[in-house]
Image 1 (cartoon, rainbow, N blue to C red):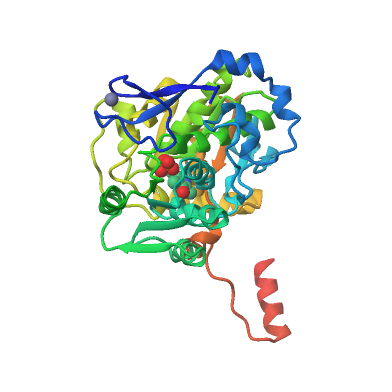
Image 2: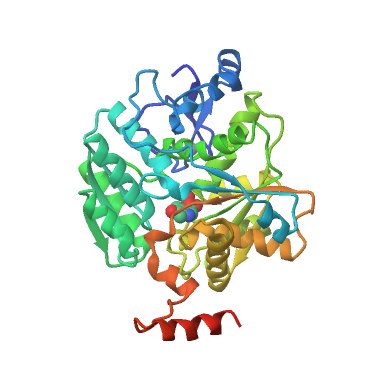
Length: 410
Ligand SMILES: *Cc1c(COP(=O)(O)O)cnc(C)c1O
Ligand SMILES: [Zn+2]
């Protein structure tokens, strides 16, 4: 890989050759992919990328840690729409607002970006089986992307995972283990099984390549805005791999001279489960919290990638903000009604945090902001109904409808 120098431990700084099945440092620290930005700058331009007819996340190959002949996995991941939303901007009291709908990926979440990368690296490394633990979306995403590429999967999810996500896993033919325990216990079981059976590891906090897939959402936002960077990017945070990936993506572009500015990141967690935000705000080491929010994808009490995530928030000059479950349900309604986008609870938690900050006057009126919808609402229709309510139920009788209609339009 000419564009990659090495893998480097974020804790002790030890460097490793960028082997496709690298895991963590011998000190236990998470590795980071280090790029040769001079090489990228000398060999590629923003125009090269903009003129690509590959409308997937693989259009960003100059910034991805893969060999020149690494095959692109079959599912169409990435290049999700970035909708400009002037009415929402006005409601929020900001100059410009865009919604990036990553729920439109093939298995309906941003996790597809990591899974596509994981599948590519597993094949590069010669594995036929790949495994992970997940609150739900990493699992369904891995199952789908691996199925399309002909790989076997072992998937560990906590028993609370929403039924829509479990249905995806089973449909994609994964070997699914529903763990009678919380996410932390699920993660530990998957780790032990992977160690024992030697499968390829798609746990984003262990396999440093996965974050490189997730970062493509940032590369896309930049390109879709004509290589201009918004003032803020808002998204939800669980394990922390997504926000760390987003920050890496914006920094890559900046370091390679493709852009001249970095955004501030708005990290949104639940008031009940916010170990990363709490540490980012106080500067104290993070501490475990209970898993206690209906936004299952970010109900993470023991985050697996806290250091990179906290660094992303602090280094970007960003804002950690917490929201209640009611505020998340409210964001589901608003995003649906104003933008026509149906997000799962964690999918719109970034939007919920942004709304709260705007109401508190903490976002300047001349700001430009992108909120990322990280997962599709059809994965969790129980909470969709909780947010939006039940439909009116009527006899098949026009008089009944008339009465209803008049009531409605009074
Ligand atoms: C995984 C996930 C997140 C959070 O990503 P982390 O890497 O765990 O911080 C947010 N929203 C959705 C829909 C997710 O699936
Ligand atoms: Zn180390």
